[in-house]
Length: 109
Image (tube, rainbow, N blue to C red; front, side, top):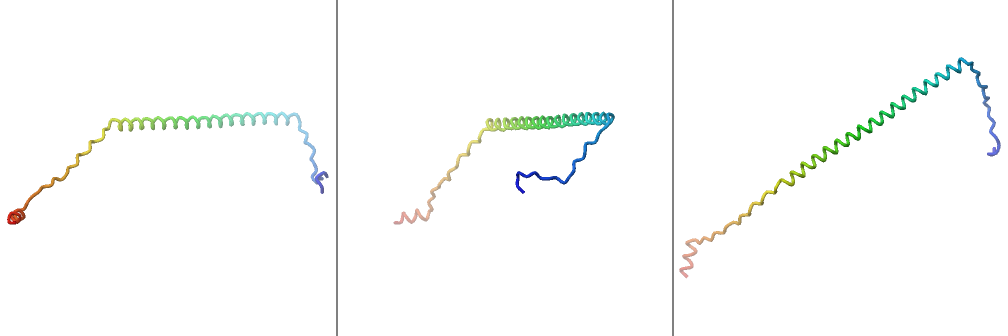
């Protein structure tokens, strides 16, 4: 088979069912109700998404405010908190002590 040849279908197409005026009216009303329900559901879903976005934004704002407050507190503590002065290092004093025996031995020489 080549691409230019039409493909024959073995299925037969059913003829369209004829509906009475009453059936068409019921179908039309049902479609209208369905469209209204879908419209309400879409609106509700849109509002839920918007509400979720607003709540997320409010939460982010609250977190940012708390962060800024804490950052200010810590920065003000750092600024006001003076570093303690380092303790002066004590140099060990060297005592020169002469023992009597060493001084005696020098005198004898």
